[in-house]
Length: 132
Image (cartoon, rainbow, N blue to C red; front, side, top):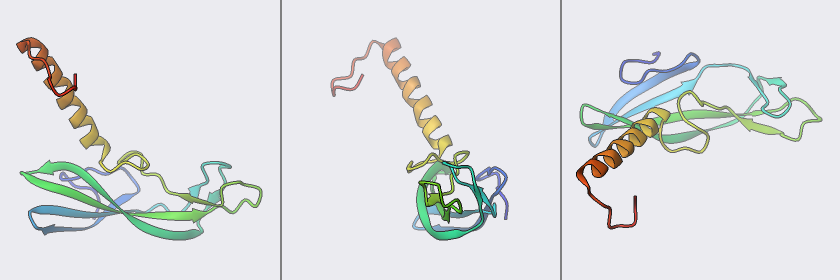
């Protein structure tokens, strides 16, 4: 299943499964690209080393929390002179490396924060908890 209105995905990503558990929607996503280039030496590799699952928060839908289960692969660099022996595929259109939320959730939270700051300024309110 490709991306949907619930979760628009870039090319090379597919939704494997959507389930509902304890008031939240779990969306399993994986990449379909067969070969990736090493980020250090740019050598293409189709040699998968291992895989793991990242748990990522996304924008809520219809009042329900959305959790992405991203199946991410590690590849072996085939260049014997490269200092990076193993590299992980990047899904930067969806989520930044090491992030625990999607880009669109991060952008929405930033926009809300800016709107709240502007509203506080207009109302003449000051934060007393040390946050400006």
